[in-house]
Length: 163
Image (cartoon, rainbow, N blue to C red; front, side, top):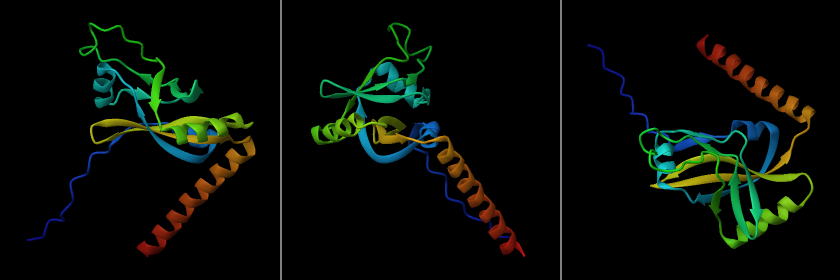
């Protein structure tokens, strides 16, 4: 009899949505964790994983941070009696020091703040936002070349281990 290989059950991921485009288009400088003010139907939709951060960014106005461009698709069953706006502006919950740091960085030329990830922390929804600086097209090519070279190295190592 062969012994069965024991596999650990996979831990469910706490990530709801990622903005992969942000790391390609921007050089991420510093990250922050922020809470989000959500309504009930939005939380239910996030539990089902119906979120998109493709064109989202952070705007600081009147000493408060706001998440713009995020898209939370309403569920058919949960949001029948609500007026739902999937792309509404959502308030980000940050402390004053973090807000001041973000505002100072955004006021510099060429820097912005983007949302890179939505995830669960316990029963709360958190957003990972990052101060970012736009990449030039040659920087994007360098990033792609580096990623391809890392893949190639892994293939070479894997082939050498098999032999």
